Structure formats: structure tokens, C-alpha cells
Length: 253
View 1 (tube, helix red, strand yellow):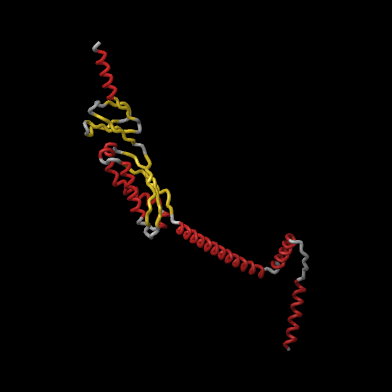
View 2 (spheres, helix red, strand yellow):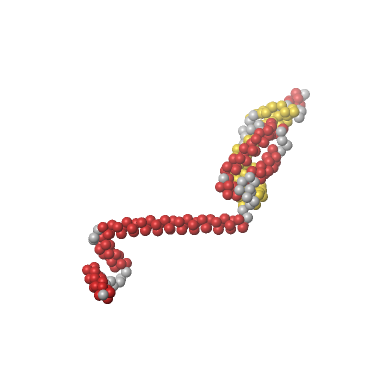
């Protein structure tokens, strides 16, 4: 009869000593308040009462950086937010070295985001977000190594501009497009004029080229429009011009 209570006590103590760690976790064991060891995923045993376990998620996690109002180098106020991907590489440091590594990392990311963005002008900020994100990542990584955290990536998601700045940028973009359109049109007219000059030289060298072109033009006019066309022979035009020149000479005499 005495063995039954003893067996129950042993089973109870054994149950208290069992710790199951998930594959994505690491367990940090403390013995009477002091760090003792780290336990791996699976079945583990600890000493009840004297030891306790803190679990740490080592998966890649995301941290949203709340929108920050930042003044750029060229004195333009912008509101910018980002997302940070990080993971714990040392479970013991993430518990022992910092009280709350998530809150600490968030506040640190907000501060460094303002510091880095303030060094760039608006055009650089809009065109080189990836480069700025890499710079922030490098700064955060140096500071969070002691906390057992590695920063995987820093992504700048949204840059919100003032309404008057949006209108100014839209006008600038419109003027740039109009300038480009005029340049393209002028270049096309230049190419067309060179082509006409070349065609004129060819027609001048070939006696029948002008006549063939004239006939082709009449054919196009007749195909597109139902118009009545009076054709004047070229010889008649030359004869008329000769008579006109003769009359002018007589008048001069």
C-alpha cells in the first residue's frame, strides 16, 4: 500500500521535469536564477523546482517600424515607414542581455531610420530605397549582435510626401515629358527634311522620276477622294512659261 503513494509522487515529479521544445524554439534553462544550459528541440528533462525554462522563437520574424516624420537633407518633410526581418541566433543573449529585445529593436530601428534618412535629399531617398535600407541594416546589425539578434533585411515600404510637393513633382514630370516630346518631334522633322533633300536630288538626276511621282500622286488622290482633276501636259506648261518670258522681254524693251 505504501508503494502506491510513492509511485504517484515519482510519476508526478517526473511529469514536472518533462519539457517539450518545438522545432522552431530553443529552451534556455536557469538553475536557481543562473543560466545553466540551452536545450534543443524534442524531449528534455529538467530538475523540478530548481530549474525553469524560457522559450525563444528562432524563426525569421517581422518588425513593423511605425511611420516616422523625417526631414530630408533638402528640408522636405516626409513620413516614412519600414519593415525589418530579423531572427534570434543566440537564445541566451536575447533573454539575458536585454529586457525585451522586440521593444528594444523597434525603438532602435525608429531612431536609426530617422538618422539615416536625414542624410539624403528627396530624390536620392525616392530612387535609392534599397541602398538606404542596406545602410540601416548594417547599423542595426552592429548594435543588435550583443542581443543575440541578426537583422536579415530592412525594407522601406512607403514614403509619404506633402500634397504641395506631390503637385510640384507632377508639374516637373509633365514639363519633362513635354520637353522630350518636342525634342522627338524636332528630330523627326529633321530626318524628314534630309529625306526630302535626298529624294529631290534623285529626282533631279532622273528625268522621268518627277513624272512618275506626279502620276503616283494623282493615283493616290483619285483613290482617296472622288474629285475631278484637270491634267495639264508638261509641254503645255513649258510653252506657257516660254510665252510669258517672251512677253516680259518685250515689255522691258
